[in-house]
Image (cartoon, rainbow, N blue to C red; front, top):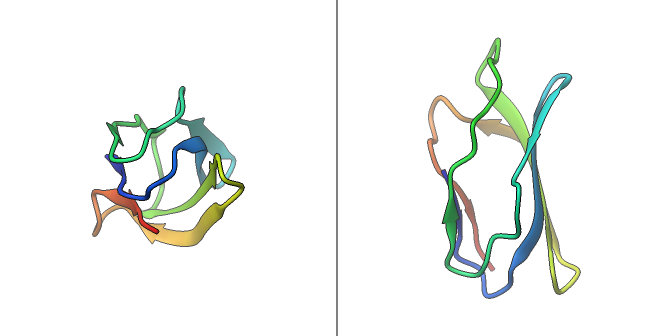
Length: 75
C-alpha cells in the first residue's frame, strides 16, 4: 500500500526491482491511498521514486517490502 501524507499530490510513483517496474496508474492526492500490485520478486528490496506536483522528489533505493508493507510519503 502507498500512502501520501504530504501536502502535495504525487504525480508519478515508480517501484522497481531489478528489471521489473510498476507504476501507479494515476496521481496520488494528498492524504490519498493506493494499492499497487508488484511483479514476482526474488528478494525483498525495491526502489521507490516519486515526483510531486510542486517539483519535489522522493527516492528510496533500498526499501524492504518484506518488513514494511506500507510506503509512506511525508513532507
